[in-house]
Image (cartoon, rainbow over all chains, first blue to last red; front, side, top):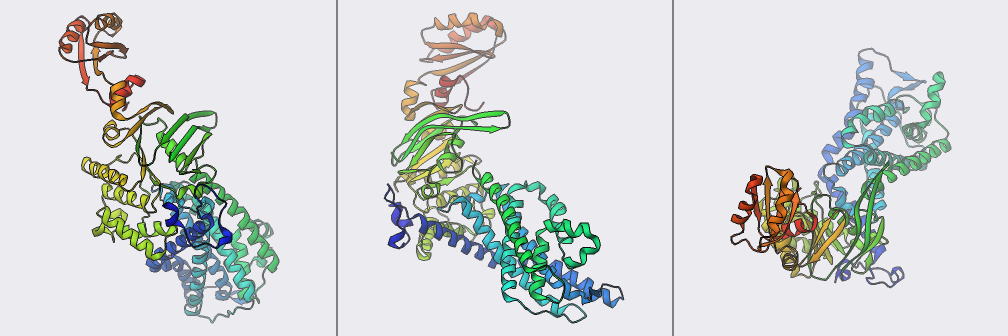
Length: 288
Length: 314
């Protein structure tokens, strides 16, 4: 009786080997995965305004102070490496938005779901393999990150006092960087959310999130860091560097940037390391 | 047998300390039964249920539910089982209706089928008025009801309830019992853990008494009481605890006394009948200084005392 209910129409070729209950494993797992994405969209739709506020507040104020206010009151930060500061900022602020979304879309909810509410069981006790629950979270977070990054673009046209020159000069690079960046930030969120105790999550913000955004080549291109050579090498462990530089390659190629291959390699390595850390923590927390 | 547990064991190791939570449990639960695991906190009940529901991996042994080995095929096994854990795991970002609806969707229901099943459950569990509420807006008893509704939404073969009445007020507890009994009509097998002997007694067809990771006795509550707990338990606390050993032969000599044993602060008597017994006991114990006397009628509690020498709520 159970089987008839959960049986989704499956192609004949995917029918599992005969067993006591010929449960349509693949069909069910896929159905569960899709249903979970739909659930996440439902919740996001309901919380769209808070989502936008959370993502946009920082870039909005940053642009306002540094590209509108400072020039008006005659304080510096006009040009960086011969380019308008707002133009330098756009890829960086998009990178921060991506990173921030990943953390607020995965790490914060996850730490609660593992902690007080144990709400994670609602998703784990389904026909979906446990690791796929984590993959779903990272996938949805990627979508949110990209949405967040795109929301930053109009701000750059509205706020700064000097005109900004942005156009997508490498579409492939732009799309690949956005997707990889979203996955990296989701993986970072997963790593934090499943390895950090809820009461220490505030501390993680101070120790991890703030340093990686300030030292993520967000407000300056990586190439200019050669003035401080040790820092230029040190920041290479920071995934935001590759996000900022990748977006710079795609959006503002006239500014000096890392070679695209190095950027993509950096993103892939970050994804591998953070994804492994996150997945290991997630499985350990779910299954005792 | 819809649930088969064979040689199940679980050892938690953290650093040098090893704790054996489950120590070789064998159980069979038949289709349609309401089966109880009764034991004190830390007896290994929750660990056993966690393993059955794929939330924990056993150190040894196996569990087969509706023909599927839960350790080897966890995601497939989950299609056949429903779980209501001790803690509230409702999706706080969704309404009550959506909690049920998306649960059905996770289990492969079409949109229309999921909507229909959710409505049906809301009606069955008297939740129609609260369908738009969020879990945090409901009382503990109602949230528990939603959790049960959600757990059976995909029509599992077996429903696992872990301490279902923990934290419920007496009224909600009785309502929950009614809801669980009603599941029998749908052919759902229920396995529950509890440390309330009353709950095991009223609700369960069969009860396994569990302590320190082992099953000590397994039978219908009536049968357990008949074979193991026929005695009324009388406990005497004495002023002169040192000399209590001398009291035991005097008590054994009484015809109403089945057996008697030392406990920390005095003696415990298992009595065949209570008629006229108390007067004789007090008389015999008088020289040792009777500080306190308590009587427990035959129940699963006295079964547990007989089996372990301890009370359920230690």
